[in-house]
Image (cartoon, rainbow, N blue to C red; front, side, top):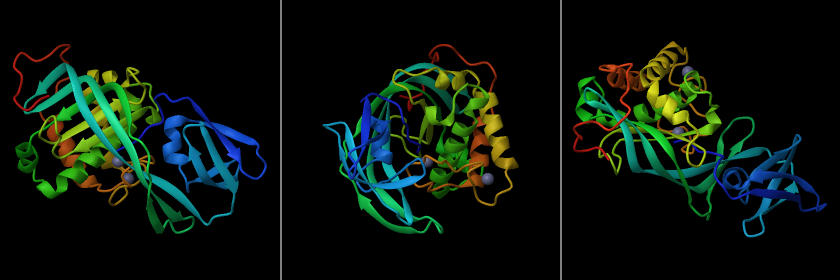
Length: 287
Ligand SMILES: [Zn+2]
Ligand SMILES: [Zn+2]
């Protein structure tokens, strides 16, 4: 899972509690990740602890500090298919493009030691969920194709999640996005599809064309994603391949080798030509 900066709300002011001065502003959705109460906020090399995120007043109150830790937020993201506009069937794999609703809620944060990255503790947060109405490309596969390729079901979540992260990292190859413009959700049993599914969505309300480019160039994109994972010399996943700096799920689970197998399954019957409409026959499990 990967979270985003975009979507409404307007800028929020960041105010120094000691001096009353305005340190800067932040987009409202970003505050849930980086300026919730207890977060460490870094401004021009100086560290501050967030004392209060006041959403009614669009204000974050921070106080100068020298913590030996940093903070990372964890979120829960759900994605709902609203309308499928295009579908291409690659054998048992279906590639879709259409409208989705992404609901994200920041639920907790961790303190991590600056030097060792050791987790020092986790605290819950009470923040509202946010809805983003946007466009997505998604890949639907069936369990049998994955088990037929040698994966066991316990590997599915890590394979899907790792493939999702790597695919987001490689999308700029076919769309002029940067990875902060793109989000993703992967799930072994999605509510709308019932089967393993990877979603990659535009972080901008209404979509910005990135997911659509991903759909149009899906074969090239996925092949590049697989090759990048395979070529990475790390043992079990690193920031250059399957880890994401903005994962809302602590980069867990991730299974690098299983992700390569999974993408091979996706590409088995892949075609360069993608359909511009719905399929003639709707498969039963597709939303
Ligand atoms: Zn993730
Ligand atoms: Zn790596």
